[in-house]
Image (cartoon, rainbow, N blue to C red; front, side, top):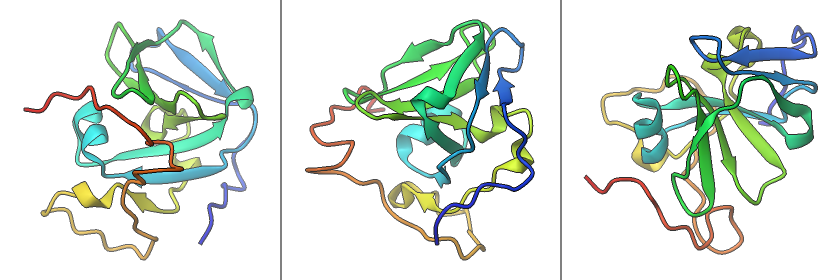
Length: 155
């Protein structure tokens, strides 16, 4: 099953943080959307999983303010509002794509995730009843996480 963007996503479309200090805009429909259950997303979002949509970098821009960043590993960083703390983006530094949190999108119902990733860290009490594909975080040679050093707390 591949990702199919919603037919009612009017472009350009936007999103932003809870307090309004940081806003972003996309000029093309996402190329992917998924639920991520990895331990880093759980900690970064304070939730059992995150929901992200991915666009090409050239179709994403901050239209108001700039996010603060946390390098969660040697290969990725996460953008968030430095004023209110809203998680906004995830990006592998060497990628041509950037992901944004669907919950920060102005029209979150216009993007439907098409898969689950990071399922090796799924919490035991979360029972997924959909039939979407489920996969683990891709680690190792030839993946975006190749050579990754985690900067996440070990506690």
